[in-house]
Image (tube, rainbow, N blue to C red; front, side, top):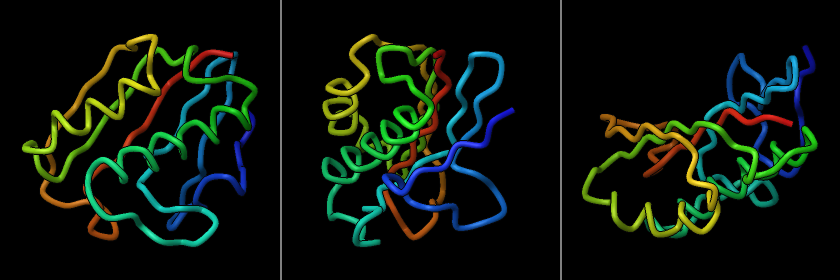
Length: 122
């Protein structure tokens, strides 16, 4: 098992890693929309969805893979009313249309509006 770590995605804010690579599979931890350079969270669901996608992409790149190799995502929204706006941004990154679950949750870390985790192949 290889632990994935990149400065191009936010560092873990708890006892976990950004991701793992094992037997040709890549598992990312959930990525919230924190800009890794500034530590700031953008305003609004569209900007937050974009930053979360970029953070997932950075971990995939660190593992030597990309969005086109994603098999499954799990998406968490603080408000299901953001579903359409989230999907519009998400579709621009996950163009291969991986399997997906998307659920509304009561609350996300740092009060963000979305979080995305992914499973990919190399």
